[in-house]
Image 1: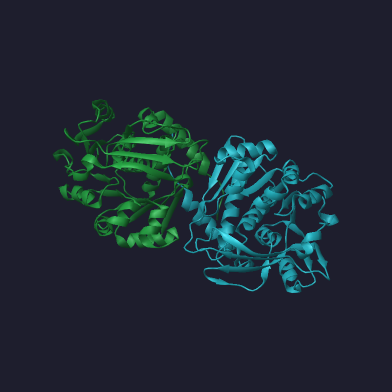
Image 2: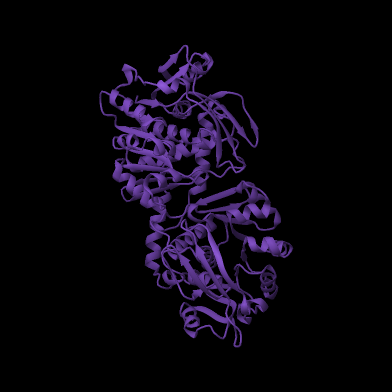
Length: 308
Length: 308
């Protein structure tokens, strides 16, 4: 069984959308990645940090999903990272209301001994120096290293971001971030420039417009499932990444052809994530639900033109 | 051989993009629709109006593509409709610089006698009253009536637009227009509301993000081919519509399943249209070029997940 190391925040989120608002609920990149990856038959471990205020029930929830939490440090006298945001009516844009780094400010990630030879490492959105620190602890070069990042690090830690980008196999970023990182409007040209920075595979997430996968001259475009209602987009990108990483770790096939399927799994899982606040939908998602929606996905994109 | 009646403008365009600008060149919805539809083995006729200033060589160009021009009225002492626009750097937005209706102001469309029993009617973007006037001239109810329209008519002729929408089978509009027409942000909900207005099939064009086809509870999502460079988006929507209508008229199969293929043909043809200014690329597009890109399209979207 393949091992997957997941690095990222485990956090409190407070979310406002046009549909309502929440108190502090479970959030964080590693949480969403872990919940998505738990749909695959793999041995995954979260590497993160929380404060003494973090409820045991949230840790139990991750354990119950077969996510190893030995790498989640608990700083007893510290407070858990807290993010609060408000989505606009179109659900595509949001304002950050509060960011309290708390224990994240001094986060020094420790990969548990048993996972230092993991096949797949998923570096969730964090300071690039922390992401690099995790890679340096691996005793064997993982078969696949996937990096998620965001515009914030391009603004304030670009050199460090380039250092980690050099060492990875797959980068997942959104369209605006791909444009910012390269200065190119065309995503085809942007992907080529990102290839030149290091990653052999570039995944560009376009939210409701789907996701693009690039590898050399090959492209794959997975649309997003059109939804009646997007209730809360928080964690959709991380859920995509978790599905992508989990599928690949489970299949142990890191080819472009198989990565297409990983994109489809990631998109499918993300389509559930947005149906409820925070992690609620992902906590109660059966494999049957996932299978059923994969079939819908296939119907959504399949056509039958016969070509010579 | 199926007959296709194409109603729309035949016009002069003057275009500015970040890549350059043109003098007055051949443009107009019926022109782009006709050029796209000319890739299919059908008998198509354009219904439009031009002024005495319209060059014979442009009319010959349409005739050479096997588009019947008996329905293009020439108002000798009038001037041809003229539109001029400037695209912004992102190529997704543009400013209209000049709109001179000229002969279009009094356009009274006449469907040639031989085409009043056409199987397919493509109503290009025009005043809804003109679109209605064409439908009323048909002696037999066409097997398929497709309507293209735009936000302008929603602003200033909404009642008339609703009258024509009631009488058609397929509407093609862009995402913002679908939202404006229904007051719904979710395209799934918007499509359902448009169904209730009349059309059994709703095609929502999302530009670089592809196109969605809706029919009852069925959806199909065709991504757009990601391009290195969009040179001039003028006419892309009309080219899509022309490919869609031409494919269906040729195959004489108006089912949802076959309409998926029509969307793919429309998207493929539109991907060529934007490569050069105005109609230039469409004038010199071979069927081999189209076949080759259809294969790329299939590669772009095909994946191989086996489901139970």
